[in-house]
Image (tube, rainbow, N blue to C red):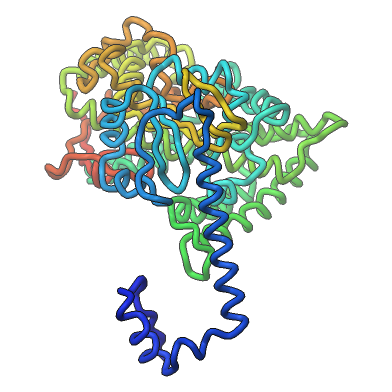
Length: 500
């Protein structure tokens, strides 16, 4: 039997006739004690939500909330955020209300901050008052024990371990492995039209697997790759855990991924005398030697998945913009090529492969990467939550409110970066003012893998610029969000060998 549910709400004068005609009975007949009980429960829940909203928005009379608009009840300004370009949404409110303003998006009362000094307070000097926060569905997918979701002693311990995996001294030996991945991809791109974003995701994913598991290729690695890719497909879906939904499929993959990782952890631990296999997993297993307060298998698994997640989409998005900006600035592309050819000549003369020290002698290419990070601002903002009532810059932020440092707004402020819409790497010939350039965040929760991300960009650009050229296919310009800002359609390009 096909079921049909009339759209609600109906106008008052049509609801009762429609209900009677559809269900074949009069409404009064249906108001049984059970129905009445459930109606009362709904009424109580609604009243509690209203009281909670009033409680959330309370504030002492001598400490005003920041200026701004809370929008419609419950919905807030979420619809406006989705209708507008997110960057325009924040910029327009900054112009109207100043560097600190309130709003209500995604079901949460929020305070947005767009000054470097205020961002430093939230992320560094008073970070203990503002904890990292993510939607519950994201925590389920990545794993609740991952470093992103914690602060305090557990976070500090993990941060030291994760940083140990990504210090220059730890990743300098990865140059040859990253180069091998590049040399595997480039011939496949030759004389083909490709989706830049998707190809960069494949490249960044392979590098992420090395950073997570080291060069040792266990039998479980291919299964982990496939399961993670299933998990990723549901990451930005609606969190509806119903059979057949992307979220449901992703959570099934997450369960299998956890089981596979536990088997790999067991294998690596049993072979510990032969070495942990490298990568973050090797570092976390090495910490197991501590007899007290050892990391559990679930803690290790969640943090390995977290590193793959953090090292994947963001890096791929930046690489896509790098190709876009170099394509659009031909003179700059030729200057980068000349710099990389100079490095290449030294490598050939010494009869060796690309090394870590070579990547330290690419100043122009490094500035191009910095300007790409600023202009594209992949991480437009980050979420924090006030852990208690906070007096902030003369305003009052109630406990539980979200606080969003707006990185992109700061990166595009003409006071810090003149002509901010212009792509100009030369601006980084002089170090930017403190707290004005935060592509990897700031403070204790900043990205520990920033050096690895820059390294894989340098290695790719070294080979790509010296051997190939690429032409954007189609004339459609613009930005799409999914969730990070990238050129429309993932920047389709045709790659051809460079005429030398």
